[in-house]
Length: 307
Length: 253
Image 1 (cartoon, chains in turn orange, blue):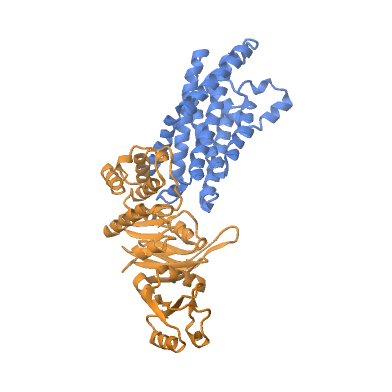
Image 2 (cartoon, chains in turn purple, green):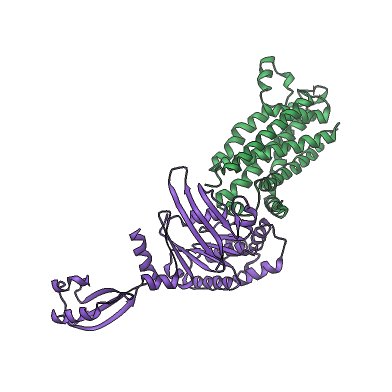
């Protein structure tokens, strides 16, 4: 799939000397949903800010649909819509006025039909004449999305789009994002909600301390790094794990009634058969067992720790 | 050239004027009327004429300039500071719009407001004193030049300011005193020679002098010097604005 955004050797060092990005190389494919994950201060927002023109890079190049963000900034920026993390709005403007302003700012001719469609898609139509100051947090977030979509961008950046949004509204936004992707818009989202990335992304990028730790297809990532967890509910409480079972790196619950064993599904041997045999030999019996697949969150945490 | 973006910024800023009509137009007009009452009526009754013009009439160009200067700075500085303050500046910086177009939108709107205000104050002055403008085109030239120059200056202050205190500091502590000491209410020629020399270091003197010349053909300095100094200040402001956008000073980091 051809890339729509290409980031090469990008670094950013602030005047304070803090290195926010360190030699980032990244390709975003046309039409995909790319989730950028990373802990606070990892460099997610800095990366987005540079691509969108809000911050200057210290080194490196970025091109958007083949247009350099510095030398062909008009062509590059006209393709991008940005929904920033914070709720930055003109409090005393009406929804209609602020969304129309955004369209004008991007050099597009007036198109009331398009603005109407965007507002209706985001369930904001009945609030079109309301001043933004009167809207709820979730509605303000949708206004930000409406502003970003007002000029019909090919690429949409969503920086923490569902931060502080209730579950119902979050799911509504996921639906909006899916619809946008279906219409051909490339979406790059940063999020703290791992389930959001797990639910929506085609590919995942993990950034930590200004460096890209990993970029991988979500399904491949889950398969490659996915581990399963076996939980054994013991018939009788034990105080400690017998020495004979030390090789399995088992975890004993605080109450002494549950043993946990992590195993690799892709490994040649899972070790489950021998574990169960050694448990029997050690006189430990269990009443029930279940297995749990590791989530993207587990993968993310282990990657960040490793980096 | 992204004309639609310039238009969007311009209309957005002008819309704010109509929303805040009392603060933007009515308040300066009331203040200026009070100046006429205090200076024109109270002091004017004791000073008969300055350079062949009645005192009340003499102060009109200075009062118009006082409002145009302060309102140009206030409008432009607030216009660009507010998006910085509330965070909506992100949209401006991420839009396909050049620095020149951003300045054109904001400074154009600020200057338009000031010019409208200047003309309203002039009309208000006509209610108090008889007015005759000898060189209306020069008057308009000075009005536009001053509004644009000080709107640019205000734009710089708005970028530089990182709090409301700084936003107010330069207009209150520098511009207003310079305007009062720049011959708004007197002729510089009335001052003792030492003070006159010091006063001539004040750039506002040249603006007011040139503007007053367009009304009454009397000036503290020659017309050429007035135009030259105004253009020089305009050029300095343009260079500073260019540098701000080139480096991203207080905008992009």
